[in-house]
Image (cartoon, rainbow, N blue to C red):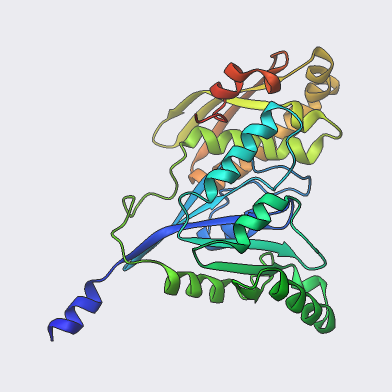
Length: 302
């Protein structure tokens, strides 16, 4: 009887870190697991700049997902900081989810690849976007990755269509170590509300502006007032040059208005309340290469 009681009482908890090349579907997968749109998803590379911790709770488990930026070679300070987030993903993981897209042949960074193949923790290699392939291609890919990462369990999924996502999640639960919960069970993520507001606005900018604009932008939410029925938000969009400010605002403010309207809709869904959102645009020269500015925006956690 005591043995049965002990089994019922046991609780599993651990960190699951998602790694892969840009646009492979990491954010889509994490959002499918967590069930909220925590991590912004667009088709331009390099959209997940922070380590987001999404938390999935059950009666006897707690899974902490971190979503890392796509693996890229650093070109300037901001990317250096993004890479340090990926490196830290190896340091606190209990399980590694290594995501590749059907058709991919290799990870872009050799050093990371070696870390994955020599990993002491369980590695689940997820072949994503299989809805875009056929059986023959899938079998070829499974063989290729089984040779490249012999220490991994390979699972074919479609994060977008939800195919095999539940199976992956169940396997994660099986592999989790026994541990008490790390965070209170009613806590969805460890990032504050302002972070989600900033990411939502930035997602809309990624969708609607071309060329370098999305990567020259950072958002800071200066005011967040929550009342019973409405949340009042005031956010500033930082750009590097005056010309970019003009592009963001658009003809008679039309471009900025579109960003505001779309962001507000997403935020109303996320917070479940009416949102009043004010957007402003400011020029903040060379924020990407300035360590102090990067620290202010939460990139360098040193």
